[in-house]
Amino acid sequence: NTVAYDLKITSPEKAAEIILKGLTRRIDVGVLDKVTPSSNNNAEEGRLYWINICGYALPTTVLELANRLRFLGGAQYDIAGKISLVKNKGYECKIEMIDANNKEHTLEG
Image (cartoon, rainbow, N blue to C red):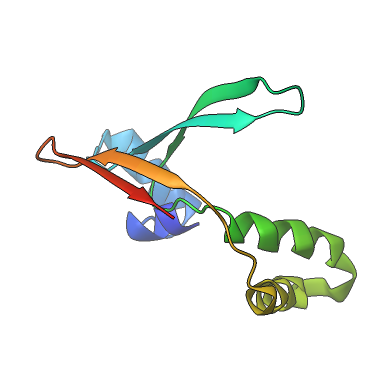
């Protein structure tokens, strides 16, 4: 788990120790307001939160393929990743964000 790794929580015992001591730490949290077109031309809206890592498009593609390649055992993720990269499928997105200085930014592609 990358969150535990970044917070230097190396074991369940270490996590319990941190909790029992009441130690806290500030971390960044990302928020995604999503609008997903549905088959009946209405939009599904929702809010997603993440910490540490946010993947869009390629990670989902790799995981969907990896699930179909379970018969390959542990190699399924490496193979799914390589196949997905070779296929080089493009993904459209628009990212709007507000930085720490309250300045708005938009990225499209």
